[in-house]
Length: 511
Image (cartoon, rainbow, N blue to C red; front, side, top):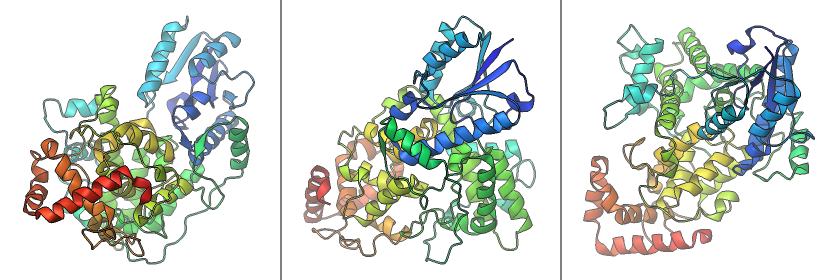
């Protein structure tokens, strides 16, 4: 039976059972489409990385003997729409059945369900054979619970896959979580640079995007493009992380620095999210390296990395599918301000935002604390509408796919879900930023100064946020200490904070 199998741009899993044997009756299709480049303004490196990876994967399948149809963005018969392209291919190739792997994004799930109703042939969906938990596993695990705390699900996943376990119930190192060891400020020691990745095809795709008038943000250059676009490159990056970065990952995973963007982060998120690497494969490789080097690498480094992959990542996946489609509309804190223009230019006098946004525009990358406590913190303190924040995060980061971006942004970063993901809003004054980075050094504003025009804007914005959102937040037990401090603040200082914060919020481009 002649079969058409769809491969989406984030389903580049060469180990999937689909590819275990070659069948001339099976045709695989990958498509570059305007529906994907245009539903949000993406970073140019994101589009290039996806297209390069898809083309590389297509070549890999063809080299293995599989039949592949590849629609480039400028292919003359490309309808630029998933449903129209599939319907067209079914007619052209006399397809008798259509198959697809379950998409990770809700919008594509709806699109494929609608397509299935229109096709006059059998349609079958398959698991992507990638995630360590099912779409419904998180919701089932927390059924009947008021708070879905990630830590408990993380422990469940550790037991389920026997990861860093002494036995079926007891964790390696006698602790489940070494998070308190993961908060050191990096002092600026020398780092071994990562391996250079192949970008010879990037110029062709950049020219293609220009020809097709695709609107993007950010920039691309050989010195800044650091995304693996094949399984071989992804494995090389994993090996580099194990040999050179794991030794300090846990200690400095929250640290930020003006000179070194990645510090000890693996930069494997894109490779994992498009499925060139399997999450369990990554975790097992890292643990194997740690086990061989226990004399130099502590468990605190390894556990911190494992927690991100089988804990937080799987938690985000389950949360997304449990809470969609309503989750994307939540705005519990009733924030409605626009995102400042400098989020698209990096032109601001606030050093932390300037460096984080400029870095993001140049590389399509920022690690989790930069996203949470710099750009996300500022957006929340200035009471930006979560729709605007979502669009920016989904577009600017190369590893951003909605299933992982949305609960991280709307939930963890913006607290727009009212506490489904996070137990409190992740907001801070300038002191936290100064503690975890060198951003405050040389800034126009003084982090130690609380009020006045030279004071760090985060200071006034922080206390103003607590003040104006009091009715929504004061019952949160994790906020009680800060509200006690607010209540003790003298009226003159409080009024100065409120006045300056109000001006900053309404004149963001002056700062």
